[in-house]
Structure formats: C-alpha cells, structure tokens
Amino acid sequence: MEPLYDALEPEQATEIEQLARVMYEAREHRRMILEQYHTDDPAEVLARIAAMTAAGECEHPAYEHYLAVCILDETRNAARSLMAARLKEDEPEIDVPAAPHLVLHEALAKQVGKMLSDPPELRQDALLLRLGNGVELTVHYASPTAYSLRWKTADGQQLGIDTAPGHRSIETGPHHLHQPDGRVTDDPLTRPGQPPWDNLQAVIGALLDDPLLTALT
Image 1: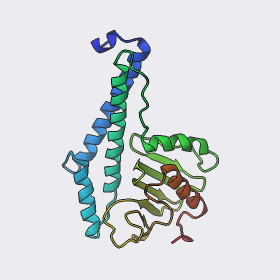
Image 2: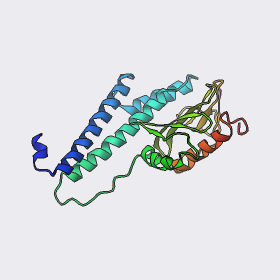
Image 3: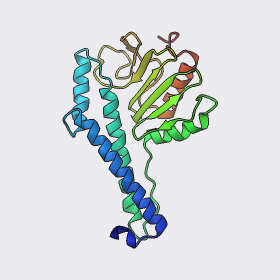
Image 4: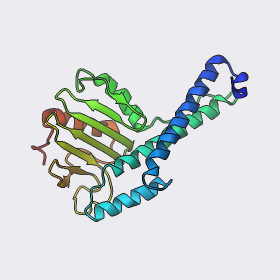
C-alpha cells in the first residue's frame, strides 16, 4: 500500500483511493475532450461556439462538449474537497454541493416505472434516459443556466433544447429548441435559472405526450 495510506484506517484509505480515482478519470476525460479543440480553456470553446452560431453553423456537439468539461471540473473539485477533509485529523464533516446532474440522477431514480422505462444511466458528464414511449434523452446539466437536453424519438428524429450562446434572433434566447428539420425556434419548456429538476420534469412530461412538441411550437 502507498505510504499515504499507511496511517489511515482501512475504510478511510478505501474512500481516499476511490476519490483519487474519480479525480484522475475526470481529469483524463476532460483532457481528451479539450484536445479536440486544441485548448485547455473551456471558455475558449464557449467563445468558438458563440462564433459558430453567429455564423449560422450548428453548435452541436461542441456545446455538449463544453458542458461536459464544466461537469467534470465540478466533479474534480468536489472530490478534491472531500479528500482534503478526509486527510485532516479531527476535520468536521463538510457539505460539498453536488453537481446538478448528480442531484437529477437521484431524483430520476424514483421515477422508474412512472416517467422512465429503465433506470437512468449516470455517466461522468451526462445522464442517459429512456422514456416509456421509446424516446432517448441525453441530459448535460452543468448549472441552472447552462444545460443541454437532446432527444431521439422512437422513429429516429432528433431534437434538443439548450442554452448555447449566439442565437440572437430567438426571442427566448439564449435557450432555444432545435427542430428535426434543422430550424432553431423558441424554447417552449425550460427557463434558465429555474431549478434543474423543474426544467427536466417539464421536458420529460411534454415528451411523453408529444416527442416532437408539435402542440407547443
């Protein structure tokens, strides 16, 4: 065992090892995403996304990559804070805020059989959901104001709601809806700044009734 762990109780050493693994995997995943954009700065990726949308180019999946990096950074910071606390003697328990997608995963786990056909799949940077009507929904939620909810219908049509910058012609901007035919229109369901669970429930409820949101757009 590493010298670091020698002075720790077995249970504590196991927790520290797990936190170290989380930090390492999040760091490597972050590195691989940003390598695609030849930068180590997520703000640079966001600036490129704004330029893309202003030029009429599609900002996806670049925006999901940006959100993934933000989520991975939150995960690393939370793991680092917990590790620091565990390595200090007589350190009181600390309350580290969970990333929104972890909070959403906990809430969604209670919805299997009601809103979901299968348990939600938790990944490092996203949630994968399958609704009872066959819709597959991928959720990237970095903060109450930075998110992407993209889904594929049972017959393969793809839509999405997100908060990527640059859509100046959209009345609801920055949040907007991507239609299956490529049009970008007003977002009829979510509001940046609202609790993530409120927005996600609104989207899931609407998709269960009408995956193409034809009655809302």
